[in-house]
Length: 421
Image (tube, rainbow, N blue to C red; front, side):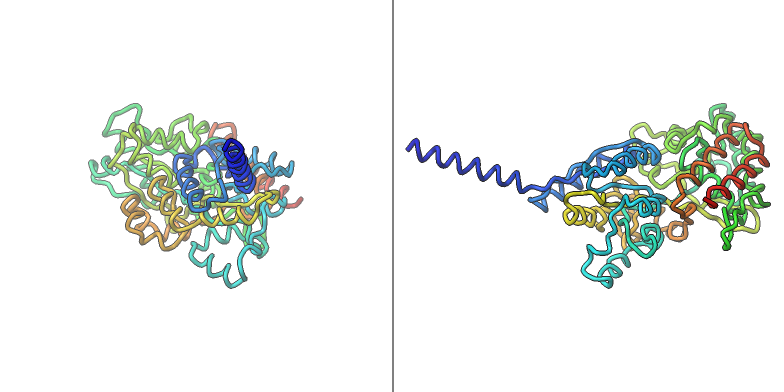
């Protein structure tokens, strides 16, 4: 009897060891702002549906730049410690050129199968994930910058959401004067030396009819459109609708200022909506409106495309399982969860008619055209250098260390030098 018990125990232990040895462990990298509280339960669901695989997540820095610094170290060392990673929409071209993302075409049954699969997504994220005809990532969620405004204050003063930058300034001044609150900002945006400040510049440039370069590849920043854009930001500071310390304001700093009730108008991304409506400390719940960005007279509204993509580490030891996980995380169910619980704008077309999504974020239906027509930041493998030049120059401009003409000339000649490498 004792011998039988020992035999059964040995067999049980052997079975447990075999099961443990057979289990595939996958590590997912996400940033601190990418809602670990929502991603965690999604991974639990994946694990329950795939008994032989266990996926867990690792949280990196709160900004795209800090996350990129860490991932650069991991991928340069060819480490397999991460299998799947959430990367910014501006990264695929860089990752493709550096060999830091696994090409995904071969994981589909056929080119037609891949085409059908990708057809369910918005074209913008798919285009961002496709480099030289190869697919390097799957869309997790998309994003765009909107004009958030205090609906209660605009209603109080009989104002409509502004369609021009001049109207925004005048409305902000009207409300600031009427409220007589020294803590109330008229217009808040990102001015720190961060990725979002590239959009702060590009959106004003686009809405003045300009672009960073023309169809022939010539840099076109030191132009009339560029001057109009920077003159406008000068005016936000000189008029007093923007705080003097805007050069220190990052994306989530803007969100928190608005959420505290201290801002009339703000440029920010889709994620902010869920915070305004759901956070316990929100002073603006039910008081927020969302509109397309204003433009200069004679030109159209324009906004930056944002969002994040699921990419595979080319040094992963479990690539087939990693791709299975990526498809799960990019699925309609996962994107619905991210839209409802994290206010992440879906990259799947069908979710813009989804009742659960629209109940949580009704503005998605109203501004679908804004989202689908959002414009990309400079698409180039040299984007890290391009980004660094624009945001640091703009940061110095917002800090009043550079004049309009100095900032335009620095970006113009600097970008010419970068692209001539």
